[in-house]
Image 1 (cartoon, rainbow, N blue to C red):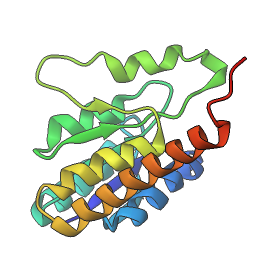
Image 2 (cartoon, rainbow, N blue to C red):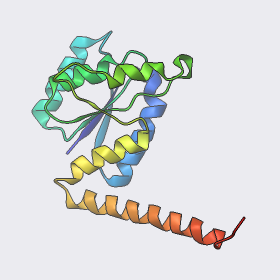
Image 3 (cartoon, rainbow, N blue to C red):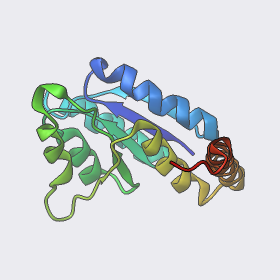
Length: 159
């Protein structure tokens, strides 16, 4: 059970580390890698061939601007691909369109929040691992407790 987090460049590392931290919370093994669909296609294809031979639960891709990485990864693998492009203020979010529109037969899922991308991958991994499912259930219960505590702190106040 492995979830590679593939970044388009090392500049994406702080964003990818947020995904890694969330995967750790759920007990999902991961690897951080750098491979560009534009600059190092052969390297990317070698990595994907190695991962496909090992068996991968899901891939998470982290690439902004023109996100060819997610499409290329999805076109080469059989496991689900979760595209988690970092937001770029330079493009006012317009660069996200390259993650949303893919050609027929290429279907990476797009999750914009890094912790949400990790949760999606954990849910996929949890299909085959009861321990991961239990950690997800505990996480969900914690969120419910937080909301209920927030509500209780208001004490039903009226405006």
